[in-house]
Image (cartoon, rainbow, N blue to C red; front, top):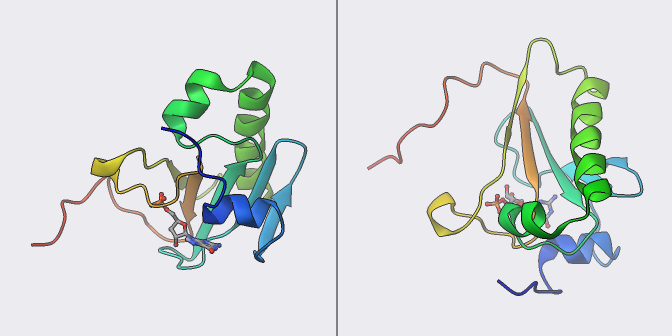
Length: 122
Ligand code: 5GP
């Protein structure tokens, strides 16, 4: 899928709309989700223009992939989440209900997250 420069995370990366920043380095910006689903809900976003995990994993240079993964782990450590734990998730495509077409990880923590994925409520 072609990358849309007008997606909301691209606008945040260009400082066109604000965010509640948690972390930033050469490769990554992380900020609080605007509609948190857990007490801690952080979005970890690569600065490069990748529309999804599929795009990122296929096309990003090794240094960007390594920098991104290292940063995600550091953010979780710096927030004190390794104990009692956290969950990371990357929605990819329609069945996963990906809404923002700029690759991001969700980092969920701050309560017992239960086991894995619950079915949609009927
Ligand atoms: P997705 O379904 O694409 O994995 O999740 C997109 C996430 O981005 C949602 O959890 C949504 O609340 C969050 N989000 C959407 N717009 C904004 C925004 O303008 N600012 C922030 N901080 N989060 C946003």
